[in-house]
Length: 79
Image 1: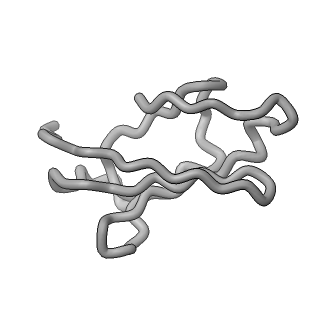
Image 2: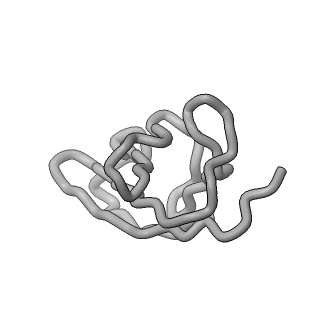
């Protein structure tokens, strides 16, 4: 679970979330996923429904023309 803050002027439907590996490869698209205001849940899987390897990932959140980035450390991603 990843906490975030978002201005009230945006709706949750305006939020697009992409997760990339450190090489810039797209790992997961969370756009359209059900998440509550203030919390994003990522199951640690890629778009092929496979668990990702341990390492550093970059989350890019976009709402309207505003973008925010955060690092995510996956330490142990077991089933």
